[in-house]
Length: 104
Image (cartoon, rainbow, N blue to C red; front, side):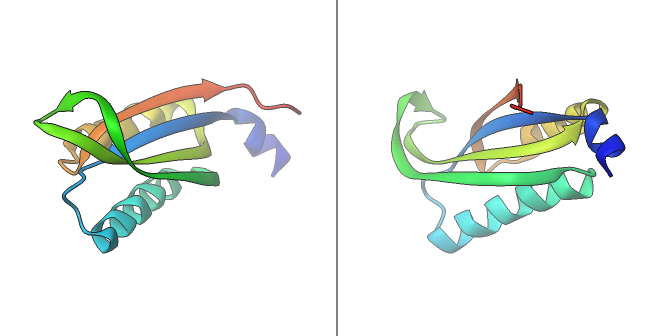
């Protein structure tokens, strides 16, 4: 409902996945992350796929990674749980999470 949606914030989250993963694994990993957001009560808006790119600096001896940007809505109190899952994910080299203002 609209009331429910008003309680949710909009977020932009860039994730960088391990470059050694197969394309199938990368797709599965992205799906898992989207499912996680949904399981926390979130709503996916869209995903931008940037593909494999060179990192600004090495992370865990890796020079590149698969970049995705997910846009979604989620209750603010679910963000710590999402970040916790990100941190536990060994296939995720890096992530960021920004709250964005939506044009109404």
